[in-house]
Length: 513
Ligand code: MLC
Ligand code: AMP
Image (tube, rainbow, N blue to C red; front, side, top):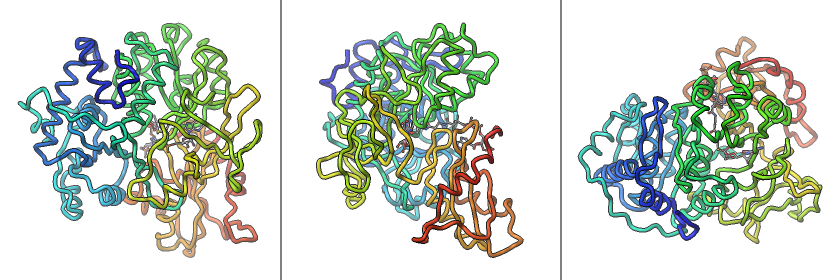
Protein backbone atom coordinates (compact mmCIF):
# COMPACT_ATOMS: atom_id res chain seq x y z
CA UNK A 1 0.00 0.00 0.00
CA UNK A 2 1.11 3.53 -0.71
CA UNK A 3 2.44 5.11 2.48
CA UNK A 4 3.64 8.45 3.74
CA UNK A 5 7.10 7.51 2.48
CA UNK A 6 5.62 8.46 -0.88
CA UNK A 7 5.94 12.21 -1.13
CA UNK A 8 4.68 12.69 -4.64
CA UNK A 9 1.63 11.65 -6.59
CA UNK A 10 3.60 9.76 -9.26
CA UNK A 11 5.10 7.36 -6.75
CA UNK A 12 1.70 7.01 -5.03
CA UNK A 13 0.12 6.22 -8.40
CA UNK A 14 2.89 3.80 -9.35
CA UNK A 15 2.72 2.09 -5.96
CA UNK A 16 -1.01 1.50 -6.40
CA UNK A 17 -0.53 0.28 -9.98
CA UNK A 18 2.16 -2.18 -8.87
CA UNK A 19 0.16 -3.43 -5.90
CA UNK A 20 -3.18 -3.82 -7.68
CA UNK A 21 -2.69 -3.56 -11.44
CA UNK A 22 -6.03 -5.15 -12.25
CA UNK A 23 -8.09 -3.05 -9.85
CA UNK A 24 -10.47 -0.55 -11.46
CA UNK A 25 -9.35 3.08 -11.49
CA UNK A 26 -11.96 4.70 -13.74
CA UNK A 27 -15.43 3.31 -14.37
CA UNK A 28 -17.44 4.91 -17.18
CA UNK A 29 -21.17 5.61 -16.91
CA UNK A 30 -21.76 2.51 -19.06
CA UNK A 31 -19.70 0.37 -16.68
CA UNK A 32 -16.55 0.07 -18.82
CA UNK A 33 -13.50 -0.23 -16.58
CA UNK A 34 -10.04 1.25 -16.97
CA UNK A 35 -7.70 -0.58 -14.61
CA UNK A 36 -4.78 0.98 -12.80
CA UNK A 37 -2.32 -0.86 -15.06
CA UNK A 38 -4.10 0.34 -18.19
CA UNK A 39 -4.26 3.90 -16.85
CA UNK A 40 -0.52 3.84 -16.09
CA UNK A 41 0.23 2.58 -19.59
CA UNK A 42 -2.00 5.16 -21.29
CA UNK A 43 -0.53 7.94 -19.19
CA UNK A 44 2.95 6.76 -20.24
CA UNK A 45 1.94 6.99 -23.90
CA UNK A 46 0.63 10.51 -23.32
CA UNK A 47 3.88 11.40 -21.54
CA UNK A 48 5.80 10.25 -24.64
CA UNK A 49 3.50 12.42 -26.76
CA UNK A 50 4.33 15.38 -24.51
CA UNK A 51 8.07 14.71 -24.92
CA UNK A 52 7.67 14.38 -28.68
CA UNK A 53 5.96 17.79 -28.66
CA UNK A 54 9.04 19.22 -26.94
CA UNK A 55 7.99 19.16 -23.28
CA UNK A 56 10.97 18.77 -20.96
CA UNK A 57 11.03 18.24 -17.20
CA UNK A 58 9.96 21.44 -15.43
CA UNK A 59 8.05 22.78 -18.44
CA UNK A 60 4.46 23.85 -17.99
CA UNK A 61 1.70 21.98 -19.82
CA UNK A 62 -1.48 24.07 -20.03
CA UNK A 63 -4.71 22.12 -20.49
CA UNK A 64 -8.13 23.49 -21.44
CA UNK A 65 -10.21 20.52 -22.58
CA UNK A 66 -13.54 18.92 -21.72
CA UNK A 67 -13.63 16.37 -18.94
CA UNK A 68 -12.87 12.85 -20.16
CA UNK A 69 -10.81 9.89 -18.99
CA UNK A 70 -7.96 10.93 -21.29
CA UNK A 71 -8.16 14.48 -19.97
CA UNK A 72 -7.67 13.15 -16.44
CA UNK A 73 -4.79 10.98 -17.59
CA UNK A 74 -2.97 14.07 -18.86
CA UNK A 75 -2.45 14.96 -15.19
CA UNK A 76 -0.75 11.59 -14.60
CA UNK A 77 1.13 11.95 -17.89
CA UNK A 78 2.49 15.32 -16.80
CA UNK A 79 3.72 13.63 -13.61
CA UNK A 80 5.45 10.91 -15.61
CA UNK A 81 7.05 13.46 -17.92
CA UNK A 82 8.16 15.61 -14.96
CA UNK A 83 6.12 18.52 -16.34
CA UNK A 84 4.20 21.11 -14.33
CA UNK A 85 0.45 20.71 -14.84
CA UNK A 86 -1.64 23.80 -15.49
CA UNK A 87 -5.36 23.08 -15.81
CA UNK A 88 -7.67 25.83 -17.05
CA UNK A 89 -11.41 26.30 -16.60
CA UNK A 90 -13.15 25.31 -19.85
CA UNK A 91 -15.24 28.48 -19.60
CA UNK A 92 -12.31 30.88 -20.00
CA UNK A 93 -12.45 33.05 -23.11
CA UNK A 94 -9.50 33.59 -25.44
CA UNK A 95 -8.93 36.96 -23.82
CA UNK A 96 -8.65 35.33 -20.41
CA UNK A 97 -6.35 32.63 -21.79
CA UNK A 98 -4.01 35.24 -23.20
CA UNK A 99 -3.10 36.29 -19.69
CA UNK A 100 -2.60 32.76 -18.32
CA UNK A 101 -0.50 31.58 -21.25
CA UNK A 102 1.51 34.78 -21.33
CA UNK A 103 2.18 34.55 -17.62
CA UNK A 104 2.97 30.83 -17.37
CA UNK A 105 4.82 30.49 -20.71
CA UNK A 106 3.91 26.82 -21.20
CA UNK A 107 5.86 24.56 -23.53
CA UNK A 108 2.62 22.94 -24.66
CA UNK A 109 -1.04 23.91 -24.78
CA UNK A 110 -3.67 21.21 -25.02
CA UNK A 111 -7.04 22.51 -26.25
CA UNK A 112 -10.40 21.47 -27.70
CA UNK A 113 -10.29 20.82 -31.48
CA UNK A 114 -12.81 23.63 -32.05
CA UNK A 115 -10.51 26.14 -30.30
CA UNK A 116 -7.41 25.16 -32.25
CA UNK A 117 -7.47 27.89 -34.89
CA UNK A 118 -7.97 30.69 -32.38
CA UNK A 119 -5.37 29.30 -30.03
CA UNK A 120 -2.83 28.71 -32.78
CA UNK A 121 -2.79 32.46 -33.40
CA UNK A 122 -2.52 33.17 -29.67
CA UNK A 123 0.27 30.64 -29.21
CA UNK A 124 2.19 32.09 -32.16
CA UNK A 125 1.76 35.52 -30.66
CA UNK A 126 2.99 34.41 -27.24
CA UNK A 127 5.75 32.14 -28.58
CA UNK A 128 4.18 29.00 -27.12
CA UNK A 129 5.96 26.32 -29.15
CA UNK A 130 3.43 23.46 -29.23
CA UNK A 131 -0.34 23.06 -29.47
CA UNK A 132 -2.22 19.75 -29.39
CA UNK A 133 -5.93 18.92 -29.30
CA UNK A 134 -8.22 16.51 -27.48
CA UNK A 135 -11.92 16.08 -28.18
CA UNK A 136 -14.72 15.97 -25.62
CA UNK A 137 -14.78 12.14 -25.51
CA UNK A 138 -11.03 11.98 -25.08
CA UNK A 139 -10.81 9.61 -28.03
CA UNK A 140 -9.69 11.88 -30.87
CA UNK A 141 -7.43 14.84 -31.51
CA UNK A 142 -3.76 15.39 -32.29
CA UNK A 143 -2.76 14.35 -28.75
CA UNK A 144 -4.44 10.97 -29.22
CA UNK A 145 -2.71 10.57 -32.59
CA UNK A 146 0.65 11.52 -31.11
CA UNK A 147 0.21 9.00 -28.27
CA UNK A 148 -0.88 6.11 -30.48
CA UNK A 149 1.81 3.46 -30.80
CA UNK A 150 4.07 5.06 -28.18
CA UNK A 151 5.69 2.78 -25.57
CA UNK A 152 3.48 1.94 -22.60
CA UNK A 153 6.20 2.64 -20.08
CA UNK A 154 8.04 5.89 -19.49
CA UNK A 155 11.37 6.22 -17.70
CA UNK A 156 10.43 8.92 -15.23
CA UNK A 157 12.90 10.79 -13.10
CA UNK A 158 11.82 10.62 -9.44
CA UNK A 159 10.17 13.85 -8.36
CA UNK A 160 11.77 16.01 -5.68
CA UNK A 161 9.16 16.45 -2.92
CA UNK A 162 9.48 20.22 -3.02
CA UNK A 163 9.58 20.31 -6.82
CA UNK A 164 6.73 22.02 -8.65
CA UNK A 165 3.86 19.67 -9.60
CA UNK A 166 1.15 22.09 -10.69
CA UNK A 167 0.21 25.71 -11.09
CA UNK A 168 -3.44 26.56 -10.51
CA UNK A 169 -4.57 30.09 -11.21
CA UNK A 170 -6.80 31.82 -8.70
CA UNK A 171 -8.28 35.21 -9.48
CA UNK A 172 -6.86 38.17 -7.66
CA UNK A 173 -8.71 40.66 -5.47
CA UNK A 174 -7.02 43.43 -7.35
CA UNK A 175 -7.33 42.14 -10.87
CA UNK A 176 -4.40 40.01 -11.96
CA UNK A 177 -4.81 36.26 -11.47
CA UNK A 178 -2.16 34.52 -9.44
CA UNK A 179 -0.67 31.13 -10.21
CA UNK A 180 -0.55 29.08 -7.01
CA UNK A 181 2.54 26.86 -7.13
CA UNK A 182 1.82 23.44 -5.62
CA UNK A 183 4.65 21.06 -4.85
CA UNK A 184 4.64 17.29 -5.11
CA UNK A 185 4.72 17.04 -1.32
CA UNK A 186 1.80 19.48 -0.94
CA UNK A 187 -0.42 17.23 -3.04
CA UNK A 188 0.76 13.83 -1.82
CA UNK A 189 0.64 14.74 1.87
CA UNK A 190 -2.93 16.01 1.55
CA UNK A 191 -4.05 12.90 -0.37
CA UNK A 192 -2.63 10.63 2.33
CA UNK A 193 -4.14 12.71 5.12
CA UNK A 194 -7.59 12.65 3.52
CA UNK A 195 -7.38 8.91 2.87
CA UNK A 196 -6.89 8.30 6.58
CA UNK A 197 -9.23 10.99 7.86
CA UNK A 198 -12.12 9.91 5.66
CA UNK A 199 -11.37 6.16 6.00
CA UNK A 200 -10.93 5.45 2.29
CA UNK A 201 -10.12 1.88 1.24
CA UNK A 202 -9.55 0.15 -2.08
CA UNK A 203 -13.22 -0.92 -1.99
CA UNK A 204 -14.47 2.65 -2.34
CA UNK A 205 -16.26 3.83 -5.47
CA UNK A 206 -16.36 7.61 -5.72
CA UNK A 207 -19.04 9.23 -7.85
CA UNK A 208 -16.98 11.85 -9.68
CA UNK A 209 -19.14 14.61 -11.20
CA UNK A 210 -16.90 17.63 -10.52
CA UNK A 211 -14.88 19.45 -13.14
CA UNK A 212 -11.19 18.46 -13.24
CA UNK A 213 -9.70 21.91 -13.73
CA UNK A 214 -9.90 22.84 -10.03
CA UNK A 215 -8.47 21.50 -6.80
CA UNK A 216 -11.70 19.81 -5.72
CA UNK A 217 -12.21 17.45 -8.68
CA UNK A 218 -8.57 17.16 -9.71
CA UNK A 219 -6.72 16.83 -6.44
CA UNK A 220 -9.08 16.22 -3.51
CA UNK A 221 -11.07 13.56 -5.36
CA UNK A 222 -8.57 12.02 -7.75
CA UNK A 223 -5.45 12.04 -5.61
CA UNK A 224 -7.24 10.62 -2.58
CA UNK A 225 -8.67 7.82 -4.71
CA UNK A 226 -5.23 7.03 -6.14
CA UNK A 227 -3.69 7.00 -2.66
CA UNK A 228 -6.40 4.53 -1.60
CA UNK A 229 -6.25 2.27 -4.66
CA UNK A 230 -9.99 2.89 -5.03
CA UNK A 231 -12.05 3.68 -8.15
CA UNK A 232 -14.03 6.57 -9.55
CA UNK A 233 -17.30 6.34 -11.43
CA UNK A 234 -16.28 9.09 -13.78
CA UNK A 235 -19.03 11.32 -15.17
CA UNK A 236 -18.61 14.00 -17.79
CA UNK A 237 -20.34 16.60 -15.62
CA UNK A 238 -22.85 16.97 -12.81
CA UNK A 239 -26.24 15.57 -13.78
CA UNK A 240 -28.65 14.72 -10.95
CA UNK A 241 -30.34 11.99 -13.03
CA UNK A 242 -27.02 10.25 -13.65
CA UNK A 243 -26.06 10.53 -9.99
CA UNK A 244 -29.34 8.97 -8.93
CA UNK A 245 -28.92 6.19 -11.51
CA UNK A 246 -25.35 5.36 -10.52
CA UNK A 247 -25.51 5.88 -6.77
CA UNK A 248 -26.30 2.19 -6.06
CA UNK A 249 -22.82 1.36 -7.44
CA UNK A 250 -21.04 4.02 -5.40
CA UNK A 251 -19.87 4.47 -1.82
CA UNK A 252 -18.77 8.14 -1.70
CA UNK A 253 -19.82 11.42 -3.31
CA UNK A 254 -17.78 14.61 -3.25
CA UNK A 255 -19.49 17.78 -4.34
CA UNK A 256 -20.10 21.47 -3.96
CA UNK A 257 -23.24 22.51 -2.03
CA UNK A 258 -25.22 22.92 -5.28
CA UNK A 259 -24.86 19.15 -5.83
CA UNK A 260 -26.66 18.53 -2.55
CA UNK A 261 -29.43 21.07 -3.01
CA UNK A 262 -30.07 19.68 -6.52
CA UNK A 263 -30.12 16.09 -5.22
CA UNK A 264 -32.60 17.08 -2.54
CA UNK A 265 -34.85 18.54 -5.23
CA UNK A 266 -34.71 15.30 -7.28
CA UNK A 267 -37.70 13.00 -6.82
CA UNK A 268 -35.56 9.89 -7.32
CA UNK A 269 -33.19 10.76 -4.50
CA UNK A 270 -34.48 8.77 -1.53
CA UNK A 271 -33.38 7.31 1.77
CA UNK A 272 -33.18 3.85 0.15
CA UNK A 273 -30.96 5.16 -2.64
CA UNK A 274 -28.54 6.76 -0.19
CA UNK A 275 -28.56 3.74 2.13
CA UNK A 276 -25.63 2.03 0.41
CA UNK A 277 -23.45 5.12 0.52
CA UNK A 278 -20.66 5.44 3.08
CA UNK A 279 -19.95 9.15 2.84
CA UNK A 280 -21.14 12.45 1.35
CA UNK A 281 -18.50 15.22 1.34
CA UNK A 282 -19.17 18.89 0.64
CA UNK A 283 -16.78 21.77 0.11
CA UNK A 284 -15.61 24.74 -2.00
CA UNK A 285 -18.45 26.95 -0.76
CA UNK A 286 -20.53 27.22 2.40
CA UNK A 287 -23.05 24.43 2.88
CA UNK A 288 -26.06 25.94 4.57
CA UNK A 289 -27.06 24.43 7.89
CA UNK A 290 -30.52 24.10 6.37
CA UNK A 291 -29.32 21.89 3.49
CA UNK A 292 -27.24 19.87 5.97
CA UNK A 293 -30.31 19.24 8.15
CA UNK A 294 -32.66 18.54 5.25
CA UNK A 295 -30.18 16.03 3.88
CA UNK A 296 -29.87 14.30 7.26
CA UNK A 297 -33.63 14.18 7.66
CA UNK A 298 -34.11 12.62 4.22
CA UNK A 299 -31.20 10.18 4.12
CA UNK A 300 -29.95 9.68 7.66
CA UNK A 301 -26.50 10.80 6.44
CA UNK A 302 -24.78 13.85 7.92
CA UNK A 303 -22.91 15.52 5.05
CA UNK A 304 -19.24 15.85 5.96
CA UNK A 305 -18.21 19.44 5.27
CA UNK A 306 -14.57 20.32 4.81
CA UNK A 307 -12.74 23.54 3.97
CA UNK A 308 -9.93 24.12 1.52
CA UNK A 309 -8.39 26.44 -0.99
CA UNK A 310 -6.43 26.16 -4.19
CA UNK A 311 -3.37 27.49 -2.35
CA UNK A 312 -3.62 25.14 0.60
CA UNK A 313 -5.42 21.99 -0.52
CA UNK A 314 -7.64 20.88 2.38
CA UNK A 315 -7.27 22.56 5.76
CA UNK A 316 -10.12 21.37 7.95
CA UNK A 317 -12.74 18.67 8.01
CA UNK A 318 -15.62 17.53 10.11
CA UNK A 319 -14.82 14.17 11.70
CA UNK A 320 -15.52 10.84 10.05
CA UNK A 321 -16.54 9.40 13.41
CA UNK A 322 -18.24 11.87 15.72
CA UNK A 323 -20.41 14.91 15.33
CA UNK A 324 -20.48 16.62 11.92
CA UNK A 325 -21.75 20.02 12.93
CA UNK A 326 -24.04 21.81 10.49
CA UNK A 327 -22.55 25.19 9.60
CA UNK A 328 -19.05 24.20 10.70
CA UNK A 329 -16.07 23.07 8.63
CA UNK A 330 -14.73 20.88 11.41
CA UNK A 331 -11.25 20.51 12.87
CA UNK A 332 -7.84 21.37 11.42
CA UNK A 333 -6.60 18.25 9.61
CA UNK A 334 -3.67 16.36 11.16
CA UNK A 335 -0.47 18.29 10.46
CA UNK A 336 -2.30 21.56 9.74
CA UNK A 337 -1.80 24.45 12.17
CA UNK A 338 -4.75 26.82 12.08
CA UNK A 339 -5.24 30.05 13.98
CA UNK A 340 -7.56 33.03 13.98
CA UNK A 341 -5.88 36.42 13.77
CA UNK A 342 -6.88 40.04 13.80
CA UNK A 343 -6.77 41.10 10.16
CA UNK A 344 -5.38 44.54 11.03
CA UNK A 345 -2.87 43.83 13.80
CA UNK A 346 -2.14 40.15 13.02
CA UNK A 347 -2.53 39.38 16.74
CA UNK A 348 -3.70 35.83 17.36
CA UNK A 349 -7.23 35.95 18.78
CA UNK A 350 -8.63 33.88 21.65
CA UNK A 351 -11.08 31.04 21.08
CA UNK A 352 -14.52 32.24 20.07
CA UNK A 353 -13.43 35.52 18.50
CA UNK A 354 -13.89 36.21 14.80
CA UNK A 355 -10.83 36.97 12.72
CA UNK A 356 -8.99 35.93 9.59
CA UNK A 357 -8.14 32.24 9.27
CA UNK A 358 -4.42 31.53 8.89
CA UNK A 359 -2.91 28.13 8.13
CA UNK A 360 0.47 26.44 8.02
CA UNK A 361 1.39 22.86 7.14
CA UNK A 362 2.70 20.47 4.49
CA UNK A 363 -0.43 21.18 2.44
CA UNK A 364 0.29 24.90 2.03
CA UNK A 365 1.70 26.08 -1.31
CA UNK A 366 5.10 27.69 -1.78
CA UNK A 367 3.97 30.94 -3.38
CA UNK A 368 2.56 32.59 -6.48
CA UNK A 369 4.22 32.05 -9.83
CA UNK A 370 6.55 34.97 -10.54
CA UNK A 371 4.89 37.15 -7.89
CA UNK A 372 7.30 37.27 -4.93
CA UNK A 373 5.73 40.49 -3.73
CA UNK A 374 2.18 39.07 -3.65
CA UNK A 375 3.51 35.93 -2.00
CA UNK A 376 5.15 37.96 0.77
CA UNK A 377 1.95 39.92 1.35
CA UNK A 378 -0.10 36.79 1.92
CA UNK A 379 2.22 35.04 4.37
CA UNK A 380 3.03 36.07 7.93
CA UNK A 381 6.68 36.19 8.94
CA UNK A 382 6.28 32.89 10.82
CA UNK A 383 5.08 31.07 7.70
CA UNK A 384 1.31 31.16 8.21
CA UNK A 385 -0.72 31.76 5.04
CA UNK A 386 -3.45 34.38 5.33
CA UNK A 387 -6.50 32.75 3.75
CA UNK A 388 -8.72 35.84 3.60
CA UNK A 389 -11.58 33.81 5.10
CA UNK A 390 -13.14 35.03 8.32
CA UNK A 391 -14.01 32.58 11.04
CA UNK A 392 -13.83 31.48 14.64
CA UNK A 393 -13.16 28.34 16.62
CA UNK A 394 -15.92 27.21 18.97
CA UNK A 395 -15.58 25.76 22.46
CA UNK A 396 -15.30 22.24 21.06
CA UNK A 397 -12.56 23.12 18.59
CA UNK A 398 -14.73 23.22 15.46
CA UNK A 399 -13.87 25.92 12.93
CA UNK A 400 -16.72 28.05 11.60
CA UNK A 401 -16.41 30.28 8.51
CA UNK A 402 -18.52 33.39 8.86
CA UNK A 403 -17.48 35.47 5.87
CA UNK A 404 -14.58 36.69 3.79
CA UNK A 405 -12.12 39.52 4.26
CA UNK A 406 -11.41 39.25 0.52
CA UNK A 407 -13.95 40.65 -1.92
CA UNK A 408 -14.94 37.35 -3.49
CA UNK A 409 -18.14 35.77 -4.80
CA UNK A 410 -18.54 31.97 -4.89
CA UNK A 411 -21.22 30.77 -7.32
CA UNK A 412 -21.79 27.02 -7.57
CA UNK A 413 -18.33 26.49 -6.09
CA UNK A 414 -16.58 28.73 -8.64
CA UNK A 415 -14.80 31.87 -7.48
CA UNK A 416 -15.44 35.24 -9.07
CA UNK A 417 -13.48 38.30 -8.09
CA UNK A 418 -15.65 41.43 -8.38
CA UNK A 419 -12.61 43.56 -9.28
CA UNK A 420 -12.19 41.62 -12.52
CA UNK A 421 -15.85 41.99 -13.50
CA UNK A 422 -15.85 45.67 -12.53
CA UNK A 423 -12.81 46.30 -14.74
CA UNK A 424 -14.63 44.71 -17.69
CA UNK A 425 -17.81 46.69 -16.98
CA UNK A 426 -15.97 49.99 -16.65
CA UNK A 427 -14.60 49.57 -20.16
CA UNK A 428 -18.08 49.45 -21.69
CA UNK A 429 -18.95 52.77 -23.32
CA UNK A 430 -21.82 54.39 -21.44
CA UNK A 431 -20.78 53.04 -18.01
CA UNK A 432 -18.95 55.43 -15.74
CA UNK A 433 -18.54 53.19 -12.71
CA UNK A 434 -19.65 49.86 -11.34
CA UNK A 435 -19.78 47.72 -8.23
CA UNK A 436 -20.11 43.96 -8.45
CA UNK A 437 -21.65 42.03 -5.58
CA UNK A 438 -22.77 38.52 -4.73
CA UNK A 439 -26.39 38.02 -3.74
CA UNK A 440 -28.04 34.87 -2.38
CA UNK A 441 -29.13 32.45 -5.11
CA UNK A 442 -31.25 29.37 -4.49
CA UNK A 443 -29.27 27.07 -6.79
CA UNK A 444 -25.74 28.47 -6.84
CA UNK A 445 -25.54 29.75 -3.27
CA UNK A 446 -24.53 33.18 -4.51
CA UNK A 447 -24.65 34.82 -7.89
CA UNK A 448 -23.10 37.86 -9.54
CA UNK A 449 -25.02 41.14 -9.73
CA UNK A 450 -23.61 44.29 -11.34
CA UNK A 451 -24.65 47.67 -10.01
CA UNK A 452 -23.70 50.31 -12.56
CA UNK A 453 -23.84 54.04 -12.98
CA UNK A 454 -24.47 54.79 -16.63
CA UNK A 455 -23.69 57.99 -18.48
CA UNK A 456 -25.84 56.78 -21.36
CA UNK A 457 -29.50 56.75 -20.21
CA UNK A 458 -30.44 54.41 -23.09
CA UNK A 459 -28.03 51.68 -21.97
CA UNK A 460 -29.86 48.42 -21.24
CA UNK A 461 -28.98 45.23 -19.38
CA UNK A 462 -28.90 43.20 -22.61
CA UNK A 463 -26.29 45.52 -24.14
CA UNK A 464 -24.14 45.35 -21.03
CA UNK A 465 -24.30 41.56 -20.93
CA UNK A 466 -23.55 41.11 -24.61
CA UNK A 467 -20.53 43.41 -24.28
CA UNK A 468 -19.16 40.99 -21.67
CA UNK A 469 -19.70 37.78 -23.64
CA UNK A 470 -16.25 37.61 -25.19
CA UNK A 471 -14.51 39.21 -22.25
CA UNK A 472 -15.48 37.02 -19.32
CA UNK A 473 -16.20 33.34 -18.84
CA UNK A 474 -19.94 32.72 -18.58
CA UNK A 475 -19.82 31.87 -14.87
CA UNK A 476 -18.36 35.33 -14.11
CA UNK A 477 -21.02 37.22 -16.04
CA UNK A 478 -23.66 39.05 -13.99
CA UNK A 479 -27.09 37.46 -13.69
CA UNK A 480 -28.59 40.94 -13.38
CA UNK A 481 -27.52 44.52 -14.05
CA UNK A 482 -29.00 47.17 -11.78
CA UNK A 483 -28.76 50.80 -12.92
CA UNK A 484 -28.31 53.46 -10.21
CA UNK A 485 -27.80 57.21 -10.19
CA UNK A 486 -25.02 57.00 -7.63
CA UNK A 487 -23.10 54.20 -5.94
CA UNK A 488 -23.27 54.44 -2.14
CA UNK A 489 -19.89 55.51 -0.77
CA UNK A 490 -18.53 56.02 2.71
CA UNK A 491 -16.66 59.10 3.90
CA UNK A 492 -13.43 57.68 2.43
CA UNK A 493 -15.10 57.41 -0.98
CA UNK A 494 -15.14 53.59 -0.84
CA UNK A 495 -18.19 51.89 -2.36
CA UNK A 496 -20.32 50.38 0.39
CA UNK A 497 -20.84 46.90 -0.91
CA UNK A 498 -22.47 45.65 2.28
CA UNK A 499 -25.23 48.18 1.71
CA UNK A 500 -25.62 47.13 -1.92
CA UNK A 501 -25.74 43.46 -0.93
CA UNK A 502 -28.47 44.21 1.57
CA UNK A 503 -30.49 46.30 -0.89
CA UNK A 504 -30.39 43.62 -3.59
CA UNK A 505 -30.49 40.51 -1.39
CA UNK A 506 -33.95 39.50 -2.60
CA UNK A 507 -33.20 39.51 -6.33
CA UNK A 508 -32.70 35.76 -6.75
CA UNK A 509 -33.81 34.15 -3.55
CA UNK A 510 -36.81 32.35 -4.90
CA UNK A 511 -35.56 31.90 -8.44
CA UNK A 512 -33.82 28.92 -10.02
CA UNK A 513 -30.94 29.81 -12.39
C1 MLC B 1 -22.63 26.86 -14.66
N1 MLC B 1 -23.04 28.13 -14.83
C2 MLC B 1 -22.66 28.85 -13.78
C3 MLC B 1 -21.98 27.97 -12.94
N2 MLC B 1 -21.96 26.73 -13.51
N3 MLC B 1 -22.83 30.15 -13.46
C4 MLC B 1 -22.30 30.58 -12.31
N4 MLC B 1 -21.62 29.77 -11.47
C5 MLC B 1 -21.45 28.46 -11.76
N5 MLC B 1 -20.75 27.66 -10.92
C6 MLC B 1 -23.82 28.70 -15.91
C7 MLC B 1 -23.85 27.89 -17.16
O1 MLC B 1 -22.84 28.36 -18.03
C8 MLC B 1 -25.24 28.16 -17.70
O2 MLC B 1 -25.24 29.37 -18.39
C9 MLC B 1 -26.08 28.35 -16.47
O3 MLC B 1 -25.14 28.70 -15.43
C10 MLC B 1 -26.85 27.15 -16.04
O4 MLC B 1 -26.02 26.04 -16.07
P1 MLC B 1 -26.40 24.65 -15.45
O5 MLC B 1 -26.48 23.67 -16.56
O6 MLC B 1 -27.51 24.74 -14.49
O7 MLC B 1 -25.11 24.44 -14.61
P2 MLC B 1 -24.25 23.17 -14.54
O8 MLC B 1 -23.51 22.97 -15.79
O9 MLC B 1 -25.14 22.09 -14.04
O10 MLC B 1 -23.17 23.60 -13.44
C11 MLC B 1 -23.48 23.94 -12.14
C12 MLC B 1 -22.50 23.20 -11.24
C13 MLC B 1 -21.08 23.46 -11.77
C14 MLC B 1 -22.68 23.72 -9.83
C15 MLC B 1 -22.80 21.71 -11.26
O11 MLC B 1 -20.81 24.84 -11.80
C16 MLC B 1 -20.03 22.75 -11.01
O12 MLC B 1 -19.73 21.58 -11.25
N6 MLC B 1 -19.39 23.44 -10.04
C17 MLC B 1 -18.28 22.94 -9.28
C18 MLC B 1 -17.15 23.91 -9.33
C19 MLC B 1 -15.92 23.37 -8.61
O13 MLC B 1 -15.44 22.29 -8.86
N7 MLC B 1 -15.37 24.15 -7.68
C20 MLC B 1 -14.25 23.75 -6.90
C21 MLC B 1 -13.19 24.85 -6.92
S1 MLC B 1 -11.80 24.37 -5.91
P3 MLC B 1 -26.28 29.65 -19.57
O14 MLC B 1 -25.77 30.89 -20.20
O15 MLC B 1 -26.20 28.47 -20.48
O16 MLC B 1 -27.61 29.80 -18.91
C22 MLC B 1 -12.11 25.11 -4.41
C23 MLC B 1 -11.29 24.68 -3.27
C24 MLC B 1 -12.07 23.75 -2.43
O17 MLC B 1 -13.02 25.87 -4.28
O18 MLC B 1 -12.22 23.96 -1.22
O19 MLC B 1 -12.59 22.78 -3.00
P1 AMP C 1 -10.56 28.52 -4.49
O1 AMP C 1 -9.75 29.75 -4.55
O2 AMP C 1 -11.38 28.25 -5.70
O3 AMP C 1 -9.73 27.39 -4.10
O4 AMP C 1 -11.63 28.73 -3.33
C1 AMP C 1 -11.24 28.75 -2.00
C2 AMP C 1 -12.26 29.44 -1.17
O5 AMP C 1 -13.47 28.69 -1.16
C3 AMP C 1 -11.87 29.54 0.29
O6 AMP C 1 -10.97 30.58 0.54
C4 AMP C 1 -13.23 29.74 0.94
O7 AMP C 1 -13.62 31.09 0.84
C5 AMP C 1 -14.13 28.89 0.06
N1 AMP C 1 -14.47 27.60 0.68
C6 AMP C 1 -13.96 26.38 0.45
N2 AMP C 1 -14.56 25.44 1.21
C7 AMP C 1 -15.49 26.09 1.95
C8 AMP C 1 -16.46 25.69 2.92
N3 AMP C 1 -16.62 24.43 3.28
N4 AMP C 1 -17.22 26.67 3.47
C9 AMP C 1 -17.09 27.95 3.14
N5 AMP C 1 -16.22 28.38 2.21
C10 AMP C 1 -15.43 27.47 1.62
